[in-house]
Length: 310
Image (tube, rainbow, N blue to C red; front, side, top):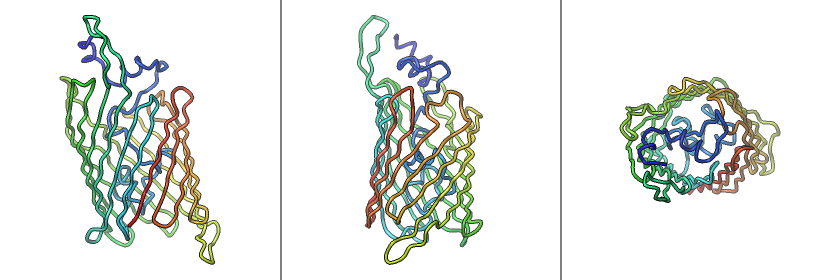
């Protein structure tokens, strides 16, 4: 493909052609700004704006970790639909009355062979992204927590074209009762940034979620109770103007094992995966999480992350 043609192709359209995506399929996302979801959110079908007390959920709602007794470090990675790789790391620590988080993410697509106008074959990495994040969240009252995060993205396409983007997230969570919590977030607000010669709008989205938690079996004799968490989100994307409904459930057994499942409905046409699931294992300061998106067309995306508290 001539290099000049790449200037006229969006990355999504180019990947769809390069990897033989079916007609109407969306190859999303186009950058880490909208391309990274916390592993637990992935397993819950993309829901979780109202799920809290977990610093790993900061990228979905910066109000999700208002209390944290100890510092925690999370390291994880994902293999995507096309063999692309995503890695992330977050360090969360108590600061003043709230919690501060610093982190980073890296994305790399698999290499591909392109042909220039002169017929020369060239092996390149289609896309590489590096994103840094700083966030802070804390209580506004006994029932309300709020948070904000700032992200800086450096993205490189076809090893020739680069862009720098800055975006911010704002979030809030409100405890409605001992069982239910409401969450809302606006993600990726910021100025336009340039890919090639064109200004691109950031992938701004608004999330509204409701989550409930119930003790299914009381614990005792050193055994934690079993807990069921159900989460639902409505997500609206400002670029596509499409809305989606997402829902998921998590069952915690003995406070050690977690089983998660979720689904997504609506949103942009041609989504590659609408069902997801995952598991978790906690033992003292260690937590291991796994998530999978079920796709029948391409590779099955899988996530793995380890969180250590100290």
